[in-house]
Length: 383
Image (cartoon, rainbow, N blue to C red; front, side, top):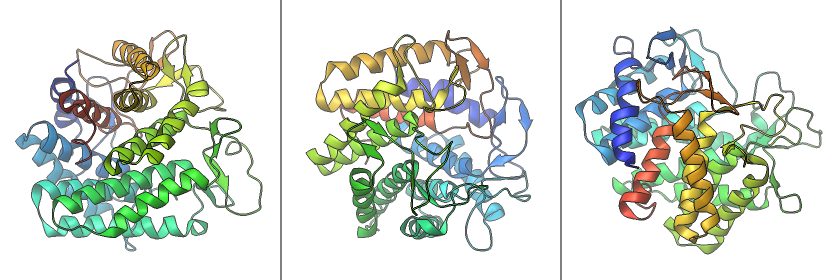
């Protein structure tokens, strides 16, 4: 498959043509299958996520003027939705107000990598300064997890495996932007090392049970459902390929071994052999249907696992996932992927964008696959 062609012709045009809010700034992601707007509420995660995706598309795929314009539209909205203390909400209205604040710092992490990558193509110092400010907010919260109750309604703080994964990714893309632009800082490498150390010794990974638990209590208070014993294969696959990327960058077999362990531990519960799809989360109340993003993460994770190890098992799984996903999630008439399908591959939710779906997981998978197929390794993606 020509991943570059698919990205340029079937994915990015959908978002350029339908989602960018050129009047107010930012991006509207709640779109039906043809791109009609269903809700103008904006997910602030996707301001940063989309900024990252369009920046990489411009730099790694093709320097199209519309990608640069998209970056300008997205970056302009950050001023509207940033709170007085420098943090970002989870969602806001079209103008940037009426905020809904979610306690985890995903919005700031994605804004940081978005600004960092945008800086690589615009070289505006204010953009880099904004990236560093968002990074510092995330790093402060990460170092002091007891100060953040993860979600509204929770009564105790707890550590999330997803945070370790996202902070590793944050460290990697801040580091590669800083090094490429003559702004190298050891704090990014230090954070990458710390997140990997936490994955190894932090308690999320049970070698006895061969499982990765998403949540761990920080205090002596016992977690209750749904956090108790919850696992999220999609996050494990994301972590697996981020860790394998780090192992390649550092040429470190111990880091690679952690990545392969994550791949293998995600497999028994996360992979449905009869239909070749990845479930969203173990212990979810409803596992009848399947959503797009874990498939993207598993596809690139297993392809990368094979690229490094030459283990045919990983290649076989990657091909099964890829074949089924492109056959049932992809809309070749209107572009992009549907949100949700059932076990038989029938489309359950034909929306191309929701409050949690926008131009990120699918483009990121395609960037990774471009690097693997066009250059033979993941290092171009990680450059």
